[in-house]
Length: 79
Image 1 (spheres, rainbow, N blue to C red):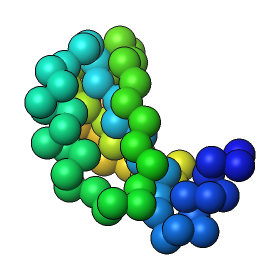
Image 2: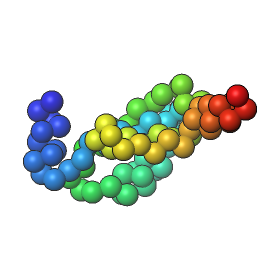
Image 3: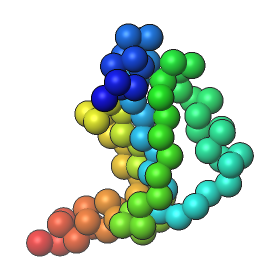
Image 4: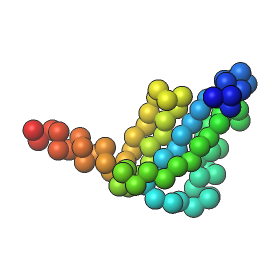
């Protein structure tokens, strides 16, 4: 909680990068360059994604480019 408040005070955001499996350090570093210098970036492995990446910013905004989301959307459209 203290880190989150300190990040906000500096004008940064809480960013969580979730990958389905471990990825190269180079890829993570390239993604980190897309965010602000004061952003606090957490990298996590989430096997439930099946494949792909999910980005959550400040626990509110989400970019879900995972295979799990694509499969869920595909099957919901059939019902």
